[in-house]
Image 1 (cartoon, rainbow, N blue to C red):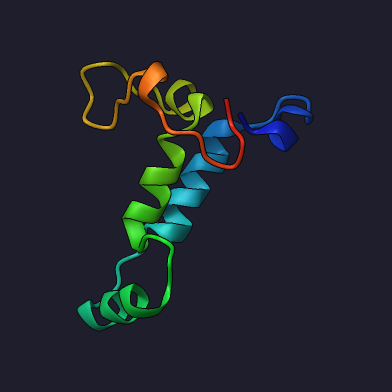
Image 2 (tube, rainbow, N blue to C red):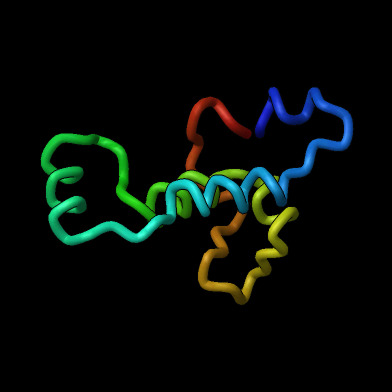
Length: 85
């Protein structure tokens, strides 16, 4: 879970995830992707936001992802990242 966020009263998870998607989901040229893949262990662009967010139960609630959506991962199948769960 997002331990720090949950400590704030009325934390806006939707705003948090939307900002993150805007920040990491930017369009990059093929050259930028190639350079990132060669020297950065993190996923690039949209995959960086999507893959990280899809591990968080708060994401599904805030964005309204349901079982029949393409981004759905069953709670028991969601990977643990940064100690979440």
